[in-house]
Length: 125
Image 1 (tube, rainbow, N blue to C red):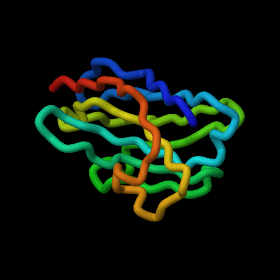
Image 2 (cartoon, rainbow, N blue to C red):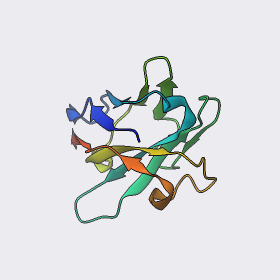
Image 3 (spheres, rainbow, N blue to C red):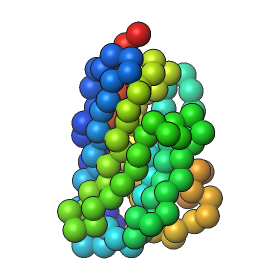
């Protein structure tokens, strides 16, 4: 089992940047495909980005492509989400998640086995 803790959220102006971190406990972090999701008030949880076990393959939602970068450091058991050129529509709670099966359905939150508690990101206009 792995425990996930997000950090790095906050309030930022439009066009600003934030870097989210997801720290994982346990010795098997590099055996999980990892993902970032977000949930705005009144909306369903939505896929943001995912990264393969080695970090060699990344995927992004169209809405963040070119602005956000997902990465991981397996030696530090940590995943990151660098968010640039932030927009008010990026405002949401951001969650990291771990998938032990490495599913090809990486955009579906149902395939992820473990979740963090979330960190809030607010982008002011």
